[in-house]
Picture (cartoon, rainbow, N blue to C red):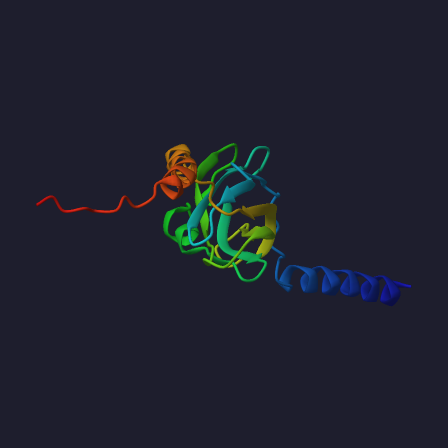
Length: 176
């Protein structure tokens, strides 16, 4: 009986020691992430900047931002360089940050609606790479609308055409 108690105690200690030696999984509370203007309308051949706000309300510890996962429908292209250049590396509990996140370049031949996503990655330490928050966005590419002055000039020219067509060349006669 004493041997059984000793073996039982050793097995409990062994399990406890193994659990202590296993690497701890880093866990961070999720963030609240919102794009400032998730639907933007733009003309072909331009670049637009998306901004957003991240809230860490209710977290017990600092949240580290270590990366981003993003994508947009072709032929548009996304550049998240501004995220890595301006976004803070971490936020303490109950803090927020608002700023630029990424830019979208629109080719001159693109028209229509294009969907995309932006996901902020990080966690409880500087090596964590969990998906913390994600937001969808839409880029509506429309052809530019002419200015009112351009339309007025066009209409004036069209109205003047019949008048100009009605004028006939007057024969030239010499006086002697």
